[in-house]
Image 1: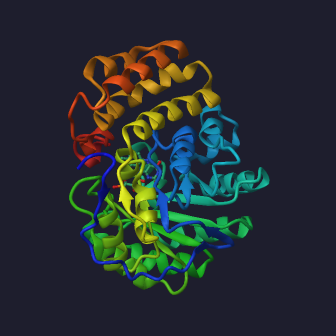
Image 2 (image 1 turned 90 degrees about the vertical axis):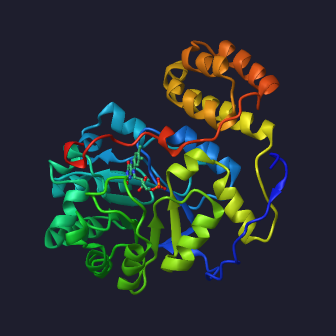
Length: 362
Ligand SMILES: Cc1cc2nc3c(=O)[nH]c(=O)nc-3n(C[C@H](O)[C@H](O)[C@H](O)COP(=O)(O)O)c2cc1C
């Protein structure tokens, strides 16, 4: 398929209701949300993505509640936003209830419009302190904690969680029901257990069971959505009100726009060569707005991804990894425009790195 041609979607039209998605008092523009990917879904990427179109709600990378309230530089950077970066929720984590409560209040006092509690992170350093997915192991504690956060603020509080700690302790339907009863505004459910990490296939039946457990609040399905078909399939099979897309948005920043076009009955098209290179350049310029000259260094992380995603020839990819000035970046971009498509690659999911080795050692 040429970049400019229209893709036909070999999928029966989704008959999910077209009702707007509301999360508490917030009305979201679409049913397709950005799942947080720590280290990737930063402000510049979110803004570039929003400019492409189709994005409902975005959530920041997970932010350490204690460090946020303590004013740590990294945490403050993670919650930096912009008037165009709306609607946005800030995701917080901690093993200490009082820190989560203070962080939620702190965010509300500074004008943030939504707080998301992380109950899915599988990393040992988070679970070891009782945060992230560890909270799935004690339903009474998790419900009390969520209730306290909900009562501490008037902005909507949401929870992002996994199905359970492992397959013998599936907890998400019961937890979703309990969280709804204490006032949570929505739940995002990644259809894997903590034990699975990022392995295996996402369990749509597990997501469906979570959807069916609640009465009113939206459940946002998450996991392995890489295409328009995947997104519609998840909604149709599980009945989820919305879908959160993480790695799929990195691999295809045009995915939200494609879904929106498809649902509106417009032709679904791949980005043109110019649009692809424009996205790369825009991402960098938005990073520069936030980080100044440091963006030359910070952008290196994305060189391999853009190299593969955009078919950037290897020598230019290498230069994207090493450039030190804005003038140099502009030169590289000019050359990419000329030679774009010279390298034929397919993009592997593995480009968005997930932790290696047995999950017990993460
Ligand atoms: C590199 C990476 C970082 C992630 N960071 C977060 C995070 O900060 N908060 C969170 O709730 N989930 C995080 N996740 C999980 C994703 O939000 C998502 O639940 C998971 O990747 C499955 O969805 P996907 O297949 O659409 O990526 C992360 C996943 C990856 C691969």
